[in-house]
Length: 151
Length: 108
Image (cartoon, rainbow over all chains, first blue to last red; front, side, top):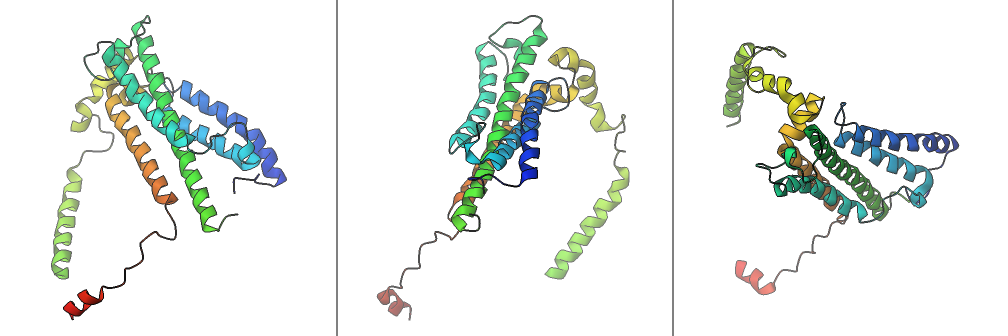
């Protein structure tokens, strides 16, 4: 299914327009997660949709793509980034896990450090969600190919 | 046995239904669950977390540890689903070994 372009003039043109906006909107939701509704989970889903739409119209040759086992590794790395942020605060001398007051980089005023910590965590969550979704779709497509039901 | 289970389920359902009227109204500010930590979150979230969004403040900052395990659970669930999906669809169950003739005789 995704080795070759999806085909169809209307879908090609429409998705070609849609993909950059989807990705930009995903990054926007990620960066503004602290101030507005939204955050890592939604941003990850949007970025994954961007990748999958790009695959649908261009096949696996598309530039913005995640191939093979990269998605599994990146999903784990995203989860690790979350935990690592917690450890960073512990290394900075925090009294409990994920106390952003003790981030190793000092910024003034103090809520800037909170903003940085929240941003790091949301990047981790977004990467994890995005790569997990891509991973699932890869698995389903691969299973269909093995099965012979999808060419 | 089945009749007994049905009777027990009916009694339990009746008990639950009779208690429903004593539950607090949804959105009641004076209900016990809304009096515990919610006022603290609402009044102090902005200065504590620096985030103007209370939901983000609670999820990522006050309950950050909880969200970390949520992310881990989601990662593991996705990974497990992928493992199940990529396993051989035909089934890799080993063929049944032919019965050992001697054992068969003993059983007989």
